[in-house]
Image (cartoon, rainbow, N blue to C red; front, side, top):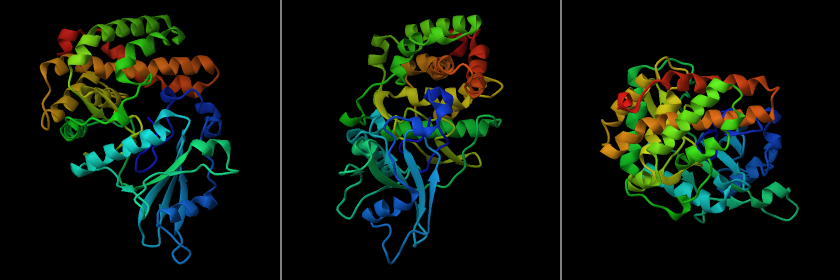
Length: 365
Protein backbone atom coordinates (compact mmCIF):
# COMPACT_ATOMS: atom_id res chain seq x y z
CA UNK A 1 0.00 0.00 0.00
CA UNK A 2 2.79 2.34 0.64
CA UNK A 3 4.86 4.30 -1.79
CA UNK A 4 7.43 2.59 -3.90
CA UNK A 5 7.33 4.52 -7.14
CA UNK A 6 4.46 6.94 -7.23
CA UNK A 7 4.65 10.59 -8.14
CA UNK A 8 4.25 11.61 -4.54
CA UNK A 9 4.56 9.67 -1.34
CA UNK A 10 1.55 7.98 0.12
CA UNK A 11 1.20 7.69 3.89
CA UNK A 12 3.31 4.97 5.50
CA UNK A 13 2.23 1.44 4.72
CA UNK A 14 -0.72 0.42 6.85
CA UNK A 15 -0.11 -2.52 9.16
CA UNK A 16 -1.20 -5.11 6.65
CA UNK A 17 1.76 -4.40 4.41
CA UNK A 18 4.55 -4.62 6.97
CA UNK A 19 5.50 -6.28 10.23
CA UNK A 20 7.67 -3.46 11.51
CA UNK A 21 5.34 -0.44 11.64
CA UNK A 22 5.76 0.18 15.37
CA UNK A 23 9.53 0.33 15.11
CA UNK A 24 9.51 2.95 12.40
CA UNK A 25 11.25 3.32 9.05
CA UNK A 26 14.73 3.24 10.55
CA UNK A 27 14.27 -0.48 11.16
CA UNK A 28 13.54 -1.34 7.52
CA UNK A 29 16.32 -3.42 6.04
CA UNK A 30 17.99 -1.79 3.06
CA UNK A 31 16.34 1.62 3.47
CA UNK A 32 18.74 4.12 1.89
CA UNK A 33 20.42 6.97 3.72
CA UNK A 34 20.09 10.41 2.16
CA UNK A 35 20.35 13.49 4.42
CA UNK A 36 18.03 16.35 3.55
CA UNK A 37 20.96 18.64 2.88
CA UNK A 38 22.32 16.27 0.21
CA UNK A 39 19.14 15.96 -1.85
CA UNK A 40 20.19 18.86 -4.08
CA UNK A 41 23.28 16.91 -5.15
CA UNK A 42 21.08 14.24 -6.71
CA UNK A 43 18.62 16.73 -8.15
CA UNK A 44 21.56 18.40 -9.89
CA UNK A 45 22.42 15.12 -11.62
CA UNK A 46 18.99 15.35 -13.27
CA UNK A 47 19.62 19.03 -14.20
CA UNK A 48 16.90 20.27 -11.87
CA UNK A 49 19.13 22.66 -9.97
CA UNK A 50 22.57 24.24 -10.01
CA UNK A 51 24.62 26.73 -8.03
CA UNK A 52 22.96 29.49 -10.02
CA UNK A 53 19.48 28.01 -9.58
CA UNK A 54 19.34 26.16 -6.24
CA UNK A 55 16.26 24.25 -5.11
CA UNK A 56 13.64 26.49 -3.52
CA UNK A 57 12.54 23.83 -1.04
CA UNK A 58 13.13 20.23 -0.05
CA UNK A 59 10.71 18.33 2.18
CA UNK A 60 10.89 14.70 3.22
CA UNK A 61 7.63 12.85 2.63
CA UNK A 62 6.27 9.87 4.57
CA UNK A 63 7.48 6.55 3.26
CA UNK A 64 8.31 3.16 4.67
CA UNK A 65 10.62 1.13 2.44
CA UNK A 66 12.19 4.02 0.53
CA UNK A 67 13.03 7.70 0.95
CA UNK A 68 10.85 10.31 -0.75
CA UNK A 69 11.46 14.05 -1.03
CA UNK A 70 9.22 16.73 -2.46
CA UNK A 71 11.39 19.27 -4.22
CA UNK A 72 10.54 22.64 -5.77
CA UNK A 73 12.90 24.14 -8.30
CA UNK A 74 13.76 27.73 -9.06
CA UNK A 75 11.48 27.40 -12.11
CA UNK A 76 8.61 26.63 -9.70
CA UNK A 77 8.39 23.03 -10.87
CA UNK A 78 7.58 20.26 -8.40
CA UNK A 79 9.05 16.77 -8.35
CA UNK A 80 9.42 13.76 -6.09
CA UNK A 81 12.97 12.50 -5.67
CA UNK A 82 12.97 8.88 -4.60
CA UNK A 83 15.83 6.85 -3.11
CA UNK A 84 14.75 3.25 -3.66
CA UNK A 85 15.43 0.40 -1.28
CA UNK A 86 17.46 -2.13 -3.22
CA UNK A 87 16.89 -4.86 -0.66
CA UNK A 88 13.28 -5.34 -1.77
CA UNK A 89 12.07 -6.61 -5.12
CA UNK A 90 10.36 -3.35 -6.08
CA UNK A 91 13.63 -1.45 -5.68
CA UNK A 92 15.87 -3.57 -7.88
CA UNK A 93 17.34 -1.96 -11.00
CA UNK A 94 15.40 -4.33 -13.25
CA UNK A 95 12.09 -3.64 -11.52
CA UNK A 96 12.61 0.13 -11.56
CA UNK A 97 13.17 0.06 -15.30
CA UNK A 98 10.05 -2.05 -15.73
CA UNK A 99 8.07 0.40 -13.61
CA UNK A 100 9.27 3.25 -15.83
CA UNK A 101 8.05 1.38 -18.91
CA UNK A 102 4.74 0.73 -17.17
CA UNK A 103 4.35 4.43 -16.33
CA UNK A 104 5.22 5.39 -19.90
CA UNK A 105 2.61 2.99 -21.26
CA UNK A 106 -0.08 4.59 -19.09
CA UNK A 107 1.11 8.11 -19.81
CA UNK A 108 1.02 7.49 -23.56
CA UNK A 109 -2.59 6.35 -23.13
CA UNK A 110 -3.49 9.65 -21.48
CA UNK A 111 -3.86 8.34 -17.94
CA UNK A 112 -2.98 10.64 -15.00
CA UNK A 113 0.42 9.30 -14.05
CA UNK A 114 3.67 11.18 -13.38
CA UNK A 115 6.39 11.68 -15.93
CA UNK A 116 9.71 9.94 -15.42
CA UNK A 117 12.59 12.43 -15.34
CA UNK A 118 15.86 11.51 -17.03
CA UNK A 119 19.35 12.97 -16.94
CA UNK A 120 20.71 14.85 -19.96
CA UNK A 121 22.19 11.51 -21.02
CA UNK A 122 18.76 9.88 -20.98
CA UNK A 123 19.30 7.85 -17.79
CA UNK A 124 16.21 7.56 -15.58
CA UNK A 125 17.69 5.76 -12.57
CA UNK A 126 21.05 6.43 -10.94
CA UNK A 127 22.83 4.02 -8.57
CA UNK A 128 23.77 5.32 -5.13
CA UNK A 129 26.64 2.85 -4.82
CA UNK A 130 30.02 4.47 -4.22
CA UNK A 131 33.06 3.93 -2.00
CA UNK A 132 32.36 4.83 1.60
CA UNK A 133 28.57 5.19 1.36
CA UNK A 134 26.33 3.39 3.87
CA UNK A 135 25.83 -0.30 3.15
CA UNK A 136 22.15 0.17 2.31
CA UNK A 137 23.07 2.63 -0.44
CA UNK A 138 25.19 0.09 -2.28
CA UNK A 139 22.06 -1.48 -3.79
CA UNK A 140 19.90 1.66 -3.83
CA UNK A 141 18.94 3.83 -6.79
CA UNK A 142 17.65 7.38 -7.16
CA UNK A 143 15.04 8.45 -9.65
CA UNK A 144 12.75 11.44 -10.01
CA UNK A 145 9.11 11.71 -11.03
CA UNK A 146 6.96 14.76 -11.58
CA UNK A 147 4.67 15.63 -8.67
CA UNK A 148 0.93 15.12 -9.07
CA UNK A 149 -1.51 17.33 -7.15
CA UNK A 150 -4.71 15.86 -5.80
CA UNK A 151 -6.42 14.61 -2.66
CA UNK A 152 -6.20 11.21 -1.02
CA UNK A 153 -9.65 10.22 0.22
CA UNK A 154 -9.41 8.14 3.41
CA UNK A 155 -11.23 4.84 3.80
CA UNK A 156 -13.41 6.22 6.61
CA UNK A 157 -15.11 8.77 4.38
CA UNK A 158 -18.45 7.54 2.98
CA UNK A 159 -18.21 6.92 -0.75
CA UNK A 160 -20.96 8.02 -3.15
CA UNK A 161 -22.04 5.94 -6.12
CA UNK A 162 -20.39 8.50 -8.41
CA UNK A 163 -17.11 8.22 -6.51
CA UNK A 164 -17.08 4.42 -6.68
CA UNK A 165 -17.98 4.45 -10.35
CA UNK A 166 -15.05 6.78 -10.96
CA UNK A 167 -12.78 4.19 -9.36
CA UNK A 168 -14.27 1.56 -11.65
CA UNK A 169 -13.86 3.74 -14.73
CA UNK A 170 -10.23 4.25 -13.85
CA UNK A 171 -9.78 0.48 -13.64
CA UNK A 172 -11.42 0.12 -17.04
CA UNK A 173 -9.13 2.73 -18.53
CA UNK A 174 -6.15 0.86 -17.12
CA UNK A 175 -7.42 -2.37 -18.65
CA UNK A 176 -7.69 -0.76 -22.09
CA UNK A 177 -4.29 0.89 -21.82
CA UNK A 178 -2.58 -2.30 -20.67
CA UNK A 179 -4.35 -4.80 -22.92
CA UNK A 180 -1.70 -7.04 -24.45
CA UNK A 181 1.11 -5.32 -22.53
CA UNK A 182 3.85 -7.75 -21.55
CA UNK A 183 7.21 -6.95 -19.97
CA UNK A 184 9.84 -9.41 -18.81
CA UNK A 185 10.75 -7.02 -15.99
CA UNK A 186 7.21 -7.36 -14.62
CA UNK A 187 7.41 -11.15 -14.37
CA UNK A 188 8.15 -11.79 -10.70
CA UNK A 189 6.38 -13.18 -7.67
CA UNK A 190 5.76 -12.56 -3.98
CA UNK A 191 3.20 -13.36 -1.31
CA UNK A 192 1.11 -10.29 -2.14
CA UNK A 193 0.57 -11.51 -5.70
CA UNK A 194 -3.15 -12.16 -6.02
CA UNK A 195 -2.45 -15.55 -7.56
CA UNK A 196 -0.98 -16.53 -4.19
CA UNK A 197 -3.83 -15.45 -1.90
CA UNK A 198 -4.82 -18.96 -0.84
CA UNK A 199 -1.29 -20.15 -0.05
CA UNK A 200 -0.19 -16.88 1.57
CA UNK A 201 -3.27 -16.75 3.79
CA UNK A 202 -3.07 -20.43 4.66
CA UNK A 203 0.49 -19.88 5.88
CA UNK A 204 -0.69 -17.11 8.22
CA UNK A 205 -4.25 -17.96 9.25
CA UNK A 206 -3.07 -19.72 12.40
CA UNK A 207 -2.05 -16.28 13.71
CA UNK A 208 -5.70 -15.14 13.75
CA UNK A 209 -6.46 -15.22 17.48
CA UNK A 210 -10.25 -15.11 17.40
CA UNK A 211 -11.70 -18.60 16.67
CA UNK A 212 -14.70 -17.29 14.72
CA UNK A 213 -12.56 -15.05 12.56
CA UNK A 214 -10.08 -17.85 12.00
CA UNK A 215 -12.87 -20.16 10.88
CA UNK A 216 -14.22 -17.48 8.54
CA UNK A 217 -10.77 -16.93 7.08
CA UNK A 218 -10.28 -20.66 6.50
CA UNK A 219 -13.65 -20.87 4.72
CA UNK A 220 -12.80 -17.93 2.48
CA UNK A 221 -9.36 -19.37 1.74
CA UNK A 222 -10.99 -22.54 0.42
CA UNK A 223 -13.54 -20.52 -1.52
CA UNK A 224 -10.77 -18.51 -3.14
CA UNK A 225 -8.74 -21.62 -3.92
CA UNK A 226 -11.75 -23.23 -5.59
CA UNK A 227 -12.42 -20.12 -7.68
CA UNK A 228 -8.84 -19.49 -8.74
CA UNK A 229 -7.56 -22.88 -9.76
CA UNK A 230 -4.42 -23.02 -11.86
CA UNK A 231 -6.55 -23.92 -14.86
CA UNK A 232 -8.91 -20.98 -14.36
CA UNK A 233 -6.09 -18.49 -13.89
CA UNK A 234 -4.29 -19.75 -16.99
CA UNK A 235 -7.38 -19.05 -19.10
CA UNK A 236 -8.03 -15.53 -17.76
CA UNK A 237 -6.75 -12.56 -19.79
CA UNK A 238 -3.31 -11.43 -18.65
CA UNK A 239 -1.32 -8.21 -18.86
CA UNK A 240 0.95 -6.15 -16.65
CA UNK A 241 -1.29 -4.66 -13.93
CA UNK A 242 -0.90 -1.98 -11.26
CA UNK A 243 -1.83 -4.47 -8.51
CA UNK A 244 -2.34 -1.98 -5.65
CA UNK A 245 -5.19 0.42 -6.43
CA UNK A 246 -6.02 1.42 -2.87
CA UNK A 247 -7.10 4.64 -1.16
CA UNK A 248 -3.53 5.93 -0.81
CA UNK A 249 -2.67 5.36 -4.46
CA UNK A 250 -5.45 7.27 -6.21
CA UNK A 251 -5.73 11.06 -6.12
CA UNK A 252 -9.06 12.82 -6.49
CA UNK A 253 -10.61 16.16 -7.26
CA UNK A 254 -14.21 15.78 -6.17
CA UNK A 255 -15.41 12.46 -7.54
CA UNK A 256 -12.85 12.32 -10.34
CA UNK A 257 -9.55 10.44 -10.30
CA UNK A 258 -6.75 12.87 -11.18
CA UNK A 259 -3.69 10.83 -10.25
CA UNK A 260 -2.35 7.31 -9.97
CA UNK A 261 0.54 6.59 -7.60
CA UNK A 262 2.82 3.76 -6.51
CA UNK A 263 3.86 1.40 -9.29
CA UNK A 264 6.18 -0.80 -7.24
CA UNK A 265 3.75 -3.74 -7.10
CA UNK A 266 3.09 -3.78 -10.86
CA UNK A 267 3.25 -7.34 -12.09
CA UNK A 268 2.29 -9.54 -15.03
CA UNK A 269 -0.89 -11.26 -13.88
CA UNK A 270 -4.62 -11.73 -14.43
CA UNK A 271 -6.02 -8.43 -15.69
CA UNK A 272 -9.16 -8.72 -13.55
CA UNK A 273 -7.10 -8.45 -10.37
CA UNK A 274 -6.79 -4.66 -10.72
CA UNK A 275 -10.57 -4.31 -10.60
CA UNK A 276 -10.86 -6.80 -7.73
CA UNK A 277 -8.15 -5.14 -5.66
CA UNK A 278 -9.71 -1.70 -6.07
CA UNK A 279 -13.20 -2.96 -5.20
CA UNK A 280 -11.89 -4.74 -2.11
CA UNK A 281 -9.93 -1.80 -0.76
CA UNK A 282 -12.66 0.76 -1.38
CA UNK A 283 -15.12 -1.45 0.52
CA UNK A 284 -13.15 -0.86 3.71
CA UNK A 285 -15.09 1.20 6.29
CA UNK A 286 -18.17 1.28 4.03
CA UNK A 287 -21.60 0.15 5.21
CA UNK A 288 -22.34 -2.25 2.34
CA UNK A 289 -19.41 -3.98 0.62
CA UNK A 290 -21.64 -5.49 -2.06
CA UNK A 291 -22.83 -2.02 -3.03
CA UNK A 292 -19.21 -0.96 -3.37
CA UNK A 293 -18.40 -3.96 -5.55
CA UNK A 294 -21.44 -3.29 -7.73
CA UNK A 295 -20.78 0.41 -8.26
CA UNK A 296 -17.09 -0.11 -8.99
CA UNK A 297 -18.09 -2.75 -11.53
CA UNK A 298 -20.72 -0.44 -13.02
CA UNK A 299 -18.09 2.21 -13.63
CA UNK A 300 -15.65 -0.32 -15.08
CA UNK A 301 -18.15 -1.56 -17.65
CA UNK A 302 -18.49 1.97 -19.00
CA UNK A 303 -14.87 1.78 -20.10
CA UNK A 304 -14.09 -1.88 -20.72
CA UNK A 305 -15.65 -5.31 -20.99
CA UNK A 306 -15.33 -8.32 -18.72
CA UNK A 307 -15.35 -11.84 -20.07
CA UNK A 308 -17.73 -14.33 -18.48
CA UNK A 309 -14.77 -16.04 -16.83
CA UNK A 310 -13.55 -12.75 -15.35
CA UNK A 311 -17.00 -11.85 -14.09
CA UNK A 312 -17.21 -15.28 -12.48
CA UNK A 313 -14.12 -14.67 -10.31
CA UNK A 314 -14.38 -10.92 -9.67
CA UNK A 315 -16.18 -11.27 -6.31
CA UNK A 316 -13.47 -13.64 -5.11
CA UNK A 317 -10.73 -11.24 -6.18
CA UNK A 318 -12.41 -8.42 -4.23
CA UNK A 319 -12.73 -10.23 -0.90
CA UNK A 320 -9.43 -11.99 -1.56
CA UNK A 321 -7.44 -8.80 -1.27
CA UNK A 322 -9.11 -7.98 2.06
CA UNK A 323 -8.51 -11.53 3.25
CA UNK A 324 -4.84 -11.27 2.36
CA UNK A 325 -4.59 -8.02 4.30
CA UNK A 326 -6.12 -9.34 7.52
CA UNK A 327 -4.01 -12.50 7.45
CA UNK A 328 -0.82 -10.48 7.11
CA UNK A 329 -2.14 -8.26 9.88
CA UNK A 330 -2.68 -11.25 12.15
CA UNK A 331 0.94 -12.26 11.67
CA UNK A 332 2.03 -8.72 12.53
CA UNK A 333 -0.14 -8.68 15.66
CA UNK A 334 1.32 -11.99 16.79
CA UNK A 335 4.81 -10.54 16.46
CA UNK A 336 3.81 -7.44 18.46
CA UNK A 337 0.96 -8.47 20.76
CA UNK A 338 1.09 -5.24 22.79
CA UNK A 339 0.78 -3.00 19.73
CA UNK A 340 -2.77 -1.66 19.93
CA UNK A 341 -2.39 0.19 16.63
CA UNK A 342 -1.90 -3.02 14.70
CA UNK A 343 -4.91 -4.64 16.32
CA UNK A 344 -7.15 -1.62 15.82
CA UNK A 345 -6.35 -0.93 12.18
CA UNK A 346 -7.17 -4.49 11.08
CA UNK A 347 -10.82 -4.03 12.09
CA UNK A 348 -12.10 -2.52 8.80
CA UNK A 349 -10.94 -5.61 6.92
CA UNK A 350 -12.58 -8.00 9.33
CA UNK A 351 -15.77 -5.91 9.18
CA UNK A 352 -15.90 -6.35 5.40
CA UNK A 353 -15.34 -10.10 5.58
CA UNK A 354 -17.94 -10.48 8.31
CA UNK A 355 -20.54 -8.71 6.17
CA UNK A 356 -19.72 -11.05 3.29
CA UNK A 357 -19.75 -14.29 5.27
CA UNK A 358 -23.29 -15.24 4.19
CA UNK A 359 -22.96 -14.07 0.58
CA UNK A 360 -23.02 -17.02 -1.78
CA UNK A 361 -21.20 -17.07 -5.10
CA UNK A 362 -24.54 -17.17 -6.89
CA UNK A 363 -25.79 -14.14 -4.96
CA UNK A 364 -22.61 -12.24 -5.71
CA UNK A 365 -23.13 -12.79 -9.44
